[in-house]
Image (tube, rainbow, N blue to C red; front, side, top):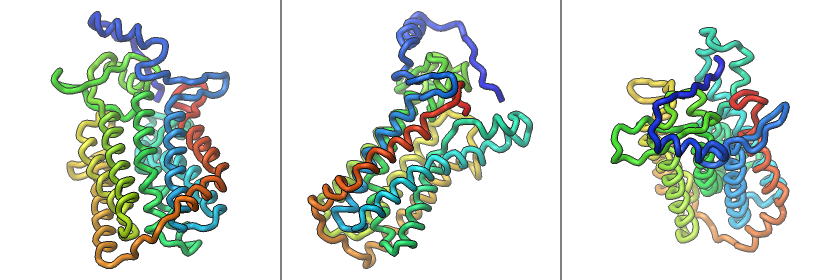
Length: 335
């Protein structure tokens, strides 16, 4: 299916002035950072890269400070593997959900596989599979690894959603009341207008900003627990993350406006993923509170040493993620 862009008239003077104001730099920052003969770099990748940098910094410090993974080369291997697998699994998730467009002939197979699209739940699932396999192979406590994951990921997701705001994806439904907060898109390069040009200038629920705020609250909650709860059970941080993130995504999904949305028994597939996250988080919490291992003392100096020893990972992992999520072909939306 070829992406279509239409110029729609009938805007108010305010909307026209807004269009002129954003025509150069994009509605919420430049959508395209660089456009060459063979590839394009979009701003979304930059936000993902920054979020990944902060997430990896938090996770490596945590792993080193609690001596969960004493060998720095193991930390590097895990971080790079997750950085590679996460975008691949996120891409696979969207292709599976979009397979009808190929089977129905709406897209050729080449168009289908060249579509640049990533599903957060696919990336999360891929990352969790890598961490679980890594813990099993190296005989490392899985819940301790997942706690480090839980500390960094909400911050990465907050920056990722800022990228969504910039790129125009994961947007909300059209606002039905001017008493509700709303955002508008005028830049034809944004995803929302490439697929739904009729939404140009329309007020949409700022679901990306709701997610930024919620992910920031989740991050601050988990950070507070990690700092001030000295004798917490191992696994409590990942349990809190799964429960809080599941609740957040379940509710935001009611306002999401991207279509088509895949429904099962009245809920979207992402809401069912959210329910599974909530249930799993509650299960882990019940387990660890009923007699799980207590976290030991942490060492700031050991955490800083781990950061120094894995400086290359702090640079390489964000670059991998940023390029994976930010590189398109000559045309935005396709490789």
